[in-house]
Length: 440
Image (cartoon, rainbow, N blue to C red; front, side):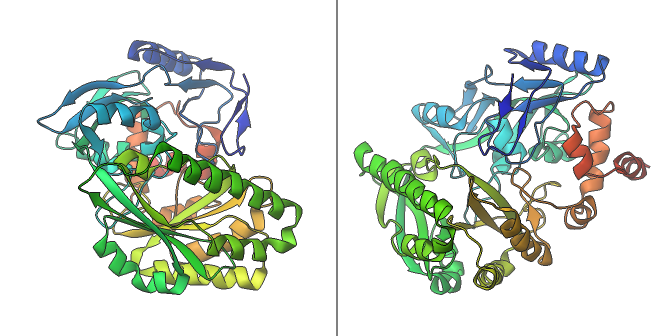
């Protein structure tokens, strides 16, 4: 079997690929990997750009562990299989009368994959998606089945919220949910500088706020979302026009033109920036949150302290105008509430997440490297599933609780079965020594 991720940044051939259909099968596979001194990684939808799941040994898919296990209407919780793909799970949840409190803008991922890498949405009152979890079930590196709750094992629970698959194979997740609701999305084009000046106001006024900015353009496409007392007002045909005809088909043409005529990128971005879609859309919450992404791209995303967000974007704009990179994808700007999760990019305080993209058939290295230097100058933290070149020494500085996390990793995976070569390189040659220091 040859595996490739969605963004075409990872390709490898595992020696053994399995789709277990129950937890006992997963336990046996972990036991085999430990006995044979091999690595074992779990793959979801392949929407990470980093080699988190790359392994020459055991690759597990949880695609046979799908759907709702149980629902508690009184407690407003739902327990689901960790392999559940969000785009299938959310309509099922809607039919039971409930919705997630918040989502990201892509719904192709699995629950475990999205939550374990720090995936997020946007809004002043909303943390990363994992802050909606109230219970985990996982199988650790010794084959032990563990049920973990925040009140009983707070340190382990927080470590599982963003774990990168380093503690074990998550099999079940219990989520806090809300009675299903409708959202009203207002999209409009405004001058970029005006949006930055009004960002605090928008965050206060709307449930969710984000914007897209095309490099070289003076304009931003703003998305302002609030609860709606009425039901859907847009037809499926209207949604098709928005999602596929404009946001994908026309955008694909724009990027092909940029690929063949890279010197025209400034003009193409100026045109796209001024002609981003405007309108009002009311629909089920899960439909409003998610947007179809059919044009392949590469992505890097960093979180920076919330108060620094506007200035970071201004510095990015100045860098682009000075270096004139050939880029045809917009930059995305979102706000996330802070948390106490050791590996969360939002640890310790509210953050602004800024994501930069490049069409997958265009060179990205110099562009990403230049902007990454700006992010790191502001003590930015990389999104674990997005491309970055952060070193162990840098990560140790901006993630102050890494030592605590790796002490737990050593406890629940003493043989290192879940550590692939990428993770060993990312977290340094001295990982075992540092863990020993942390435990002592």
